[in-house]
Image 1: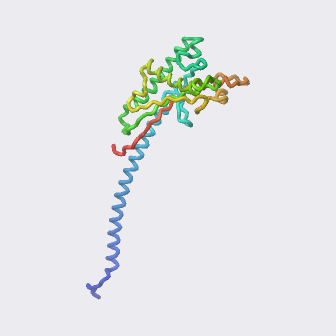
Image 2: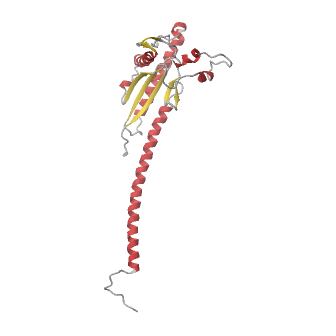
Image 3: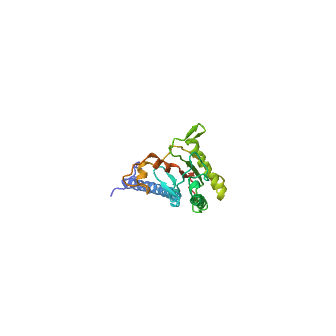
Length: 246
């Protein structure tokens, strides 16, 4: 049997394979360690995503007694139908104030209850200990007006009127029930008016689906435009830097 040449420069085939195997083991250990780190990071991202989704779900599912959520425009439509006297914006100048004060007072009571529902929803989210994100809530009160041709001058028209109605709603909530979203912790209030524009609008097709429609009746624009004297409420969670560490 030949003896191995101790002065040989090249290692044997077995030595090469052993070295390569050792390198592969090291590479596998490093890769697996990095994979585990990345897996933990992804788990945190998933958890934060689910946390954020739960916030939006709570906002979307606010009491349907007072609000109807429109997923297309991501807005809550005020379900309490208010009909103002023409050119008026105070909640004490509804059409019902001229015809039936009891009905008018009941409408105002429902409006107060709706404001409390928004306030309670935001408060419950702010007090939820499982939500670890630093989140503010933007509340937008958007007034709309029916396309009734109301226009006196640049200061008295449906664009201005819709804003005045939204502002009057804010003041009504503040005075009647001490509801002031502008003074809530981590909450910002925006008051706006979209006049005869804005989305969504109550249309002729919507009217045909309503309880007021009688099959076969001739529909006039005034029949469905009166339903656009309403409010749209936006409750938008504003999420800053996402905290990945608990």
